[in-house]
Image (cartoon, rainbow, N blue to C red):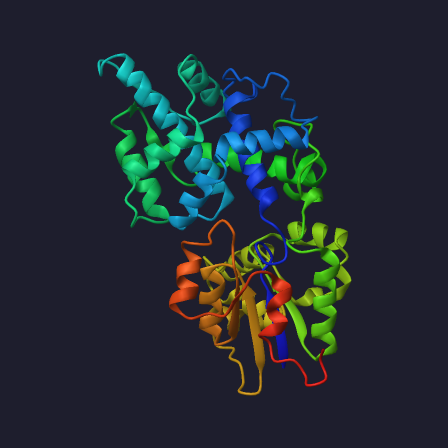
Length: 385
């Protein structure tokens, strides 16, 4: 067997629309009357008629030329849900500290967030306080969070320290709290748009009127060049596979629009939809990356008869097999390592000096600037030009 398995985000597709959607989520929760309703200088903001210029402006305001994104990547926070959540927590925390300073420490804010109504009340409490810039949020987080902390440790640390500035039930800080889930819903409405949101979630969105960013997804290099890459690999005897943390719809829609869908056998396209279904069917947890489950599905297929073996990690490559995994993240590398495949790293612009980049360097992983450069590493037939 000869096979090349691709990750999607940061390899085939740009992550820009995810970052845009997360910025729009933060902005909407802060300023929309459907949520907190804080005053905004963007009085013409209308989620149903948002322009590309407004999206760029909002992203700049929320992420500050991506300085917060880079800081989050440095601390191994790569989920866009986590990114918007930590950003909002930083904003709340900063405003609570300003309030405490104004009262000379005599009073602190107190609130809980267990519903949208609670969020609106928080907006009323924070009304009139300065809303921090991205630079101020980063300054606060960087001062309070150790450089060595990563992943779940960040939320634990933030919750421990926020109690000195915010009274009440701080369970809203936790992952998958009511507040966290409200953000997921808002993010998915921005990303999918109303039509695909209803198809995906089987319910109407809370704040309607969005066309969505999914239909605007861009490839990292021209789509026709990736199409050529797929065809060259197939002509050279390689089968193709996909292993991604995206769900099925998030892969199908852009692949169809970019002209790639028919180039791949979808029995070997493994998404988070597959890992979640398997978790439920087999009563298991954490089958997403870096667990090798999705990579196994992309290599050997998604047959339910084989999935139990993937979970047990009992399916192995033979000496004759030549399997490459192409990814931009350390979780892709760890999945590859577990299966014993070859690996090629694609450099991630946001994470180019931290996190995954350090893992690739430490393990002497061959890396390329763009996915179409992998042909310089994969051993091609002698007659290939």
